[in-house]
Length: 620
Image (cartoon, rainbow, N blue to C red; front, top):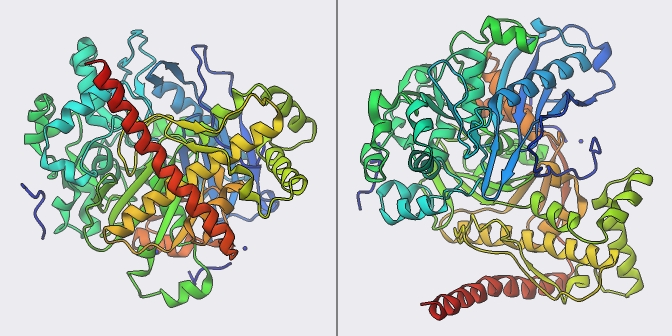
């Protein structure tokens, strides 16, 4: 497996649209049954004529659909398919069904294999990735409701659910030492606050639940019968201290590692001491490094449902964003790849942006870097032996969808896009180009000089770490035209990019040396979105050859489980491939403009805090 082509004992605690253009997943609000299976599929032209070969299967369960991708031994996507999943949204409560999700996974896997003309025996390894949603099942593996409705189908609290804000505040007030490994505070999107909410509000469900699992771990468990948890999920979302295993890095033994990293004092302090019972049986008695084989591979029952071969190796899972990191972080130019072949520090200069409904900002380091307001450091949560720093924005694709779809000009714009066979984003980008010509703007970004957006419509995950933060728009008028919508869309894209700049600055101020971005996910297909990120951060943005980096990352887990590669990082180096590189503008006027707008962006939040304080005082 040659170089990349164009188109890698410390204390546990310091007790001190089938449209490929720019797709972003939409947050549906529905209580109806999931539509009869609808599958979106893509395939490479040569897939149907390829000879018998070994392929890797990646499964990615996102917010709105389950996706499956078939990759060859060079990391090239042969075919992919997706199937929708149902979602219920009632206020801050957002729920799904694990049964529905598994049916969608099976439909997507069968369709992808069919489209690629792949036989069951050709799939040599499988990996699962999913959102960091929380699944509840009983002793028989049946769903346990997590819903006020009592509907037993609704046994998944979706990652973006914010019902547990108060529980998170109480947990953070404990000042437990584990909090230093998640930026100083837990987000309501993490699992301990959600578990505490269920215990306090759904007592019957709490008593019945036999296993609480991250969705990607549940998928692996459903496929293999092995409930070993991933270091990725447990460390990043459950406060597990992965560095408990720094002396157990011998990866061949990782499948059988006893879960030594739970901090029992923490669970006792926050009122969840019952989860310690049975050697933490409900939340994980054993853990493994991502990609290590689980159980005896696919069970006969799961293999039949998926249309695959019983015993096919299944790799320990990853959260979807982290799979995107695995599928993209070594996507560097051939010249850079050759220079960094034996340089373990080279990968530490890159940040992967996994851009979908939300955006996750993934960076790794060889040393432990504690960064206020940014999750981590998480040891071996993504790449074994590296510390992971994880920034994030809770609503990016979801925010753009929200603002566009709720604008009065949206229906007409959507009809025009459909009649022209293009996407709404592509049409908005064309409108902006025309406006720049009409108004004789010196450069495109200058169109938004009077419009500023703070994109914290679903709180701020990083680096302010304020789940109560609100979105702000400065510069609205009575204009309801498509042109005004285009400007609002553009200013929001810029606001999201300023948020990324804020995260990078916080990371670099605390020890990182980031100088390159790698972007993947639906929003990475939007050239305006990527160019703004390059211009606003001042860093080049690499787009991987394979745009479906999360699926590739999941497939890499299968390749490692099948022993095709010695380590996860070796597999990344072999299967990650760079595509296009987008460089920041060299025009100093563009930099000066964005520096000014960035100062306004930062000031908007400070003003919000001031207003919040004023109103709190008024109501005292």
